[in-house]
Image (spheres, rainbow, N blue to C red):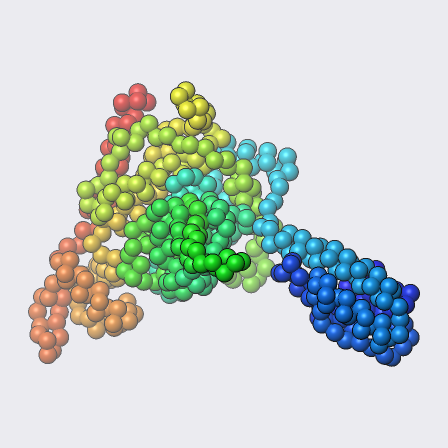
Length: 508
């Protein structure tokens, strides 16, 4: 038998000969079996070392004669021994290849009957979205009530034909990556791909269907700039194709097409919203809660972990249940019979794409509730589908209101946060004017960031210079305190009026 206990020195011993295969064998070239071999007669010091291809008959025959002459043994014995060791090495190489393929096969959990029953029972619960949000909290995601549920539903949409995407935005160190990673832990391992750094061409070398209905997680968009273009194509067109030059075995040059199929759901984190505008347009923008209250919640949780007072078993069970819930969701078409009556606020920028996201989000909620819906069959095509109801639209409106508000805002997220903090400070201090130096100290803002925010606010005509000059400095005042609240009220009123109209026309 072939002894492979030492991966760099296989041993094979017969009645007459002792063989050592030095350095093991390669598994990537099945058309050859090239080895470095040492061979000797038992209990003798005369050793012959040689490198040869056991599939090359001429090399083997020359080696047989050389061994017979050098070790003074019959050629038939040597020939038979080499044939036996070749067969053993072949079998072992096939075993290594099988083990490698099994190790590379993504882990996929098979649910037991009990686990499947519990997951389906959970999906049939009343107030499913609020119960899901509670369970996400129990799994260890602290605060971020709206963002965490939005993100979970966006990740769930990977199973549909029109997945959604999201980008988490916020200052450095506020927990963007932590939130994304924590919610991603609620998605089965076999359904997600995590990326830290990836080369520009890497996406084109996945197997054709390897990315289908996967969640692609990018820890930091700054480290994945080279793949943002193919990612955008994958988001929009649901496939990417690259043409490359290839030489066949005869040396003939030809072009081949590398195609990778989607759809995929993409999630990433960044501090720089404006740099990734093309990607932002295709995604839900989730602004991380940077409030003092959220800081306190997270720090209290960190202290409880350190004190050993967190129920880790409950967190684990919550995560596993939410993963099982994802596993029992089946692909099914969603039809929204109310879609033609829905509308967006006129204040929303880029309404075409936002409208598409809005409709897809409603479908994602309906998809998540598939075990609560009656299945219908299209009589012409035989396709099975479920329908959206008014409750789905109402829940979508509640969750998406902040997203629509952000998409209606003249200011980007960081500038809006600065402006809201500035207004709160002035109200608290009962002031109507301020200087840059005063606000820089009070809000602890980086000078270069403050300069950029002030320029944006002046261009948007939300603040103006009240007095002063360039040499001594300016005193500023706020022109409009209620811009954000007014827009928010307009959006809220419009969404509610649509729901009211749908309910009255539907007789409910």
